[in-house]
Amino acid sequence: MMSQRENMLRAIRFERPERIPMIFWINPSCYHHYPPGALDDLAESHPVLFPWYQRAKTPFAVPAAPPPPPEPYVDPWGITLASPEEGIAPVAVKHPLANWEDFDRYAPPPLPELKDEEKARPNLAAENRTQALAAGRLIQHGLPHGHTFLRLCDLRGYEALICDMADDEPRLWRLIEMVEAHNAALVQCALQRGAELVSYPEDLGMQVGPMLSPTHLRTYIKPSYTRLMKLARDAGCIIHMHSDGDIRSLADDLVDSGVQVLNLQDLVNGIDWIRTRFKGKLCIDLDIDRQTVTRFGSPKDVDDLIRTEVETLGSREGGLMMIYGMYPGIPLENAKALMDALEKYAVHFA
Image 1 (cartoon, helix red, strand yellow):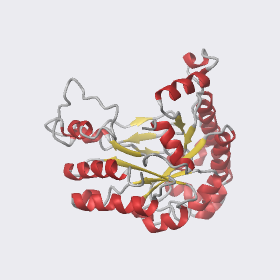
Image 2 (tube, rainbow, N blue to C red):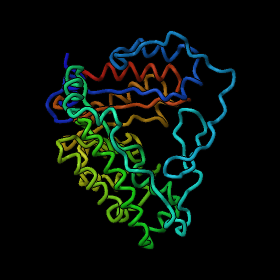
Image 3 (spheres, rainbow, N blue to C red):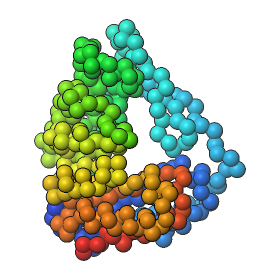
Image 4 (cartoon, rainbow, N blue to C red):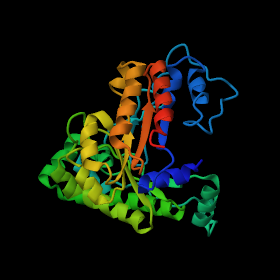
């Protein structure tokens, strides 16, 4: 069997992988919502998806009542964040630059740099790559989710940011430069660590349509994306981008920025549209539905969905990867059916 590393590289490069790379990710909040041991049983019974899984010695105890929401906190950017539940990504509830009058006094966090123990290793990248090669894995690093557009939203507020773009607010350019400098330092750290794939995760779509117009993306966001991705592409890295939502009107510009692997949602964008636009042209990292079929369908519906997506978007040459994120509310029987289907159809073209 090919290593995970070789198989993934072959899928990305259209070099006939042994199987379709499949990922099933369980959000930590799930452990508060399902019976004790249920998720462990699923993981243990699907070794292809969870090859390194080990059941905890102390079983996870589901509380009698859901734990209280985590307390709001202020991040290094001065953004006040709050989450409805442990494990669920927080959202901004207070924006440090809601008023531009505060901009001249605003101080961003220090530029990221390697840890002291990493600085003490002069051959850090080579050592990391040697270890990764021996373990059969790919070194993957990336920017935090919401690194540019969503960071600007959190700093200014969504409506205020869109108005800034419409008004061509001159201070917005200075803020973009500030955010980009931070992200560029993170990319440089990834390269120093020997990254082979660098990810740029950022949600740009809504349920219908994008969060910003294609014109505003091209004017304010795409130039920054292009420069940040060029840093990694010039170093020989694979460029991966994730974006939730309907991004059909933005997709061409994202690819033009340098994206080589695009992680986008299946049913929101449409399987046939994805096939027409991207099949055979770049690697599709398909984000599997969490809203309709896997939540409300039958196990057979789940199996049918995965088979249809594999047959529509996949090929023996490669160019397809798939990922599913499990959140509370998905019936356990559907989670099992999805795991079964991912393992079964991973070798559909073998």
